[in-house]
Length: 403
Ligand SMILES: Cc1cc2nc3c(=O)[nH]c(=O)nc-3n(C[C@H](O)[C@H](O)[C@H](O)COP(=O)(O)OP(=O)(O)OC[C@H]3O[C@@H](n4cnc5c(N)ncnc54)[C@H](O)[C@@H]3O)c2cc1C
Image (cartoon, rainbow, N blue to C red; front, side):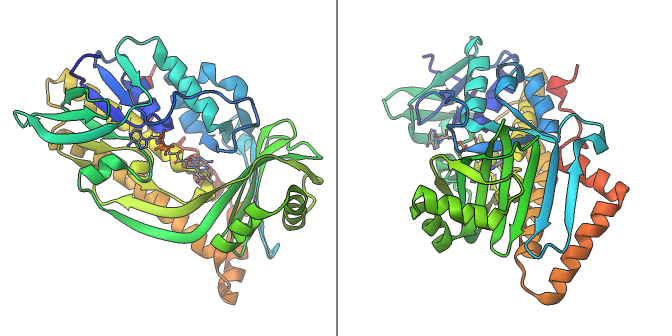
């Protein structure tokens, strides 16, 4: 390992790897430090961590050369049906209404990470260190122009820029002294892959219960990935149930839309929280993905936001290199933050609003919610706009992948 890197990315999750993919042809030397083992693609249906990647970001993955390693593992989501517990209103989003083959694709996180890792492996400019960790950072290490990083195994690297892609509990963020705004929903998302009697036909189902949404997301043939948001004690109860008890509870709550749920894999639960770093950047450091913002998985947009962070940051770094600027300087990194904040704030704000609207028990508001869903459902123009926004298709195509 050389003792200099143009960029050090801490965290080799989906967002850190996407950033490295976007930087790999810029001539910059990239080092990724990942605490865990290198990603391995689990056999299909085995990873209960699944993400819906919206169509705008599928285009990004295609442009990065990742999609070719991934497309056979991805399940198209052609339609989404949403309804609430009161059965007062329902809404349907159909990809054909925006002339697209799908609204997005459902992909197990291990498949996405393994595909990105594979795409990076043929690049001489990218070094993937794993399992590895940083034990100390000196932000003003070399002439105040480069940070010095000491790894747990004693190796020392200098770099103009450290990127925190190390998830919601970001160590890099903490070392940079960046605080967060936090919102604890006091809920957990129980995730599990299930087999249903009837095929899902590429339809995602989202049922809003008073405690939060229960989503059935189409994976392969008769397999769906479910995310069941529930208050902490209820989520713990769902986790502790025997397989038969859990299947009964699930069938009772979801109803017969896909026939009976006949089988469920291993269950896991993730605490649901909203979190936003007060700064996405400081001199010599930038945060991307969950390290910068965690959102409620209600609309499945967390990693989608992170992928867009990665593309914008990669572009700013590449431009700075081209114009002979120091890409670790605050003035350069500020350009990244200014571009990303409107998207991040609008998605976070919408998720908070949706969460409140769908978990309210205030009688008047419940009726308005039903009315609102019917209005959106019947108004072609509003629905079209909503679909293009939520699939990321209304956003500009990142420069790196423009043909
Ligand atoms: C139940 C649930 C369902 C979700 N569904 C969706 C969905 O459908 N669509 C969607 O867009 N999003 C979804 N999300 C959100 C999505 O999972 C996250 O936004 C995404 O995983 C964030 O990716 P990341 O790379 O930023 O962080 P992470 O996935 O957390 O990766 C961080 C990486 O950094 C490594 N790391 C951590 N600390 C260190 C360290 N000190 N040194 C070195 N390495 C370190 C970790 O090992 C890990 O590999 C969901 C989330 C939950 C909880």
